Image 1 (cartoon, rainbow, N blue to C red):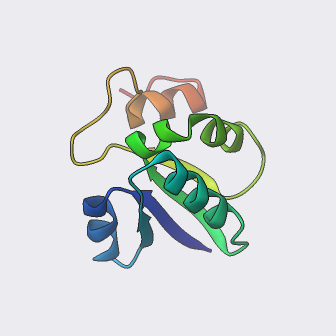
Image 2 (cartoon, rainbow, N blue to C red):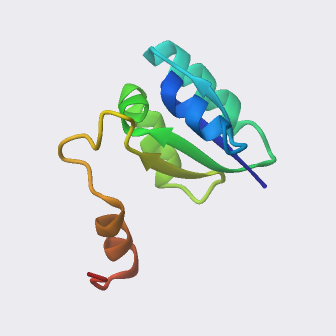
Length: 102
């Protein structure tokens, strides 16, 4: 199982420094093509995508998140920080397990 990142150039560079491959995207068309290519990779287990890139292709991202298919999709903030209205990791985990962790 491998990881892959879709994000801005800084995110791809940073994750690349720890061995996670990725692709920098700057438009909705680039994001859609990269997303489809990543999802077609049968070895991909976890797809990491920055919130701002995910917003460019929100319907596709939501279809994957709400399905039973792989890869697992994880949205992360980019260097500009978390987008307004997006839940943090703690909120997401609390909702997933049904109890408040802290």
